[in-house]
Image 1 (cartoon, rainbow, N blue to C red):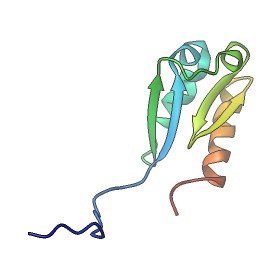
Image 2 (cartoon, rainbow, N blue to C red; image 1 turned 180 degrees about the horizontal axis):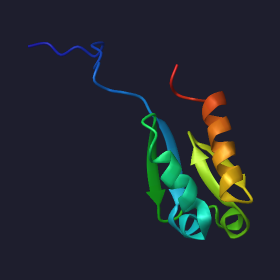
Image 3 (cartoon, helix red, strand yellow; image 1 turned 120 degrees about the horizontal axis):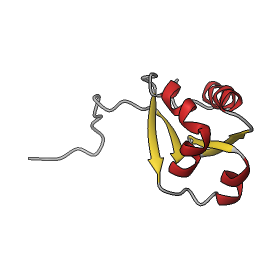
Image 4 (cartoon, rainbow, N blue to C red; image 1 turned 30 degrees about the vertical axis):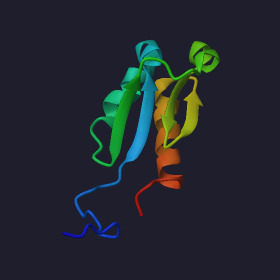
Length: 92
């Protein structure tokens, strides 16, 4: 039986990746997490630490498809994350 490397797996669905630091979630980013949890086009990840401690001390932040997005408050962070998803979505 031959295996084809070129065969497409049609059941795989791409999703935008949004990652949160657990510490930053406890500082206020959890409000953004809860809103994004409702979206089907996003896969959320919580990390123990994203090694962005100097940003975490001063701002709320999320990593959207590899890009660090920061803001002063949860409402602004949500707007910034949604803007990033519009501009650089993995979905076509």
